[in-house]
Length: 472
Image (cartoon, rainbow, N blue to C red; front, side):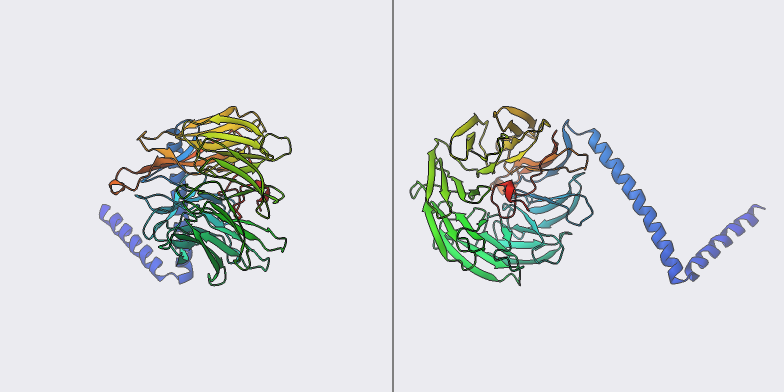
């Protein structure tokens, strides 16, 4: 009886296999799709369980964290890359890692990575539908090779081209002339002649439309604004270790409009970052590493000037932070300063370290008022826009090594869709010595208590104006 049962089982298996093999392609396809769907559902359940277990072991106030082999010097960007209603964060990394990361904003899961050609990815990321095909593209640059990359939402390389030299300049993107074709403007470091270049490239075959050169490195983000009322966006850049100049360039022709020379000499560092604009785009603000703060009109004439005994490396951010319907200026070095638009000081506070990449303006503590959010050494800190009092602090210390720091600019959005915002940062150590063996990093999504507004890219928008009034 047992032998007979075994025979029946074997015959059944053979018949089942034969039946599967004899099935029509349509039937077989449906069966495979059903099995694939079952496996995908099981994989999704496993991912959710893994994320749940990870979440249970996270520090208080952390949505997720991701360990890396270096830190981040520039800024990432946040967008819904594939249009599914969920946000992704794209950010670069320094020597030792040298990848562009794309992670799920809700979980920190790595969706893809893109390896640089040679060096770190210091220049802040830009995300935009550059060619107008309805699909977002990601722009990042290799700080060593000078290659500018255009990647698809899935991380595939659309194209790349070589800039005149290496670069830390965050690209600015806009339709300068309003003709329906976008342009990308980006700077590069000095060449053998001691001059850096600023170039304007069209979305049509990435053709160079114009280029200008100035003494020093153009590390700054180009700032786009119509300076001469011709309905064409013009370009403002600054120089680092060069001529101490703020340079305005005609957006259509590349001709020089004006230059304003800030205080300093041949040994002065000048300006690493770009200018900021008032909401009406009639006033230009700039802080220099020599400690000078300037307000200029659109013709490059000085409106006012203040000097601080401070190394003002970070860019100025312009926003109404105290709720009086007037714009304020936030900037810093070893201290954080808040000025009225006319230069009158509102408040200042001493920092534990120094301000590197500027601030974001958002409600961090959930009281409905605006806070100034920034990185101070190893902490993410918020201060009340009206008083300067501390309203939020998250200690992001990882390993505590000598050069461990948060060097990147803060990003803010509702990562997980719960109605409250999170902030993105990378803490770590990134040096160019010892073959990078001591470099490390950790990307962290920190839970805030407010509902925004979001701050999703460096300088708030792709015109890089440092003013959220100019966000699209």
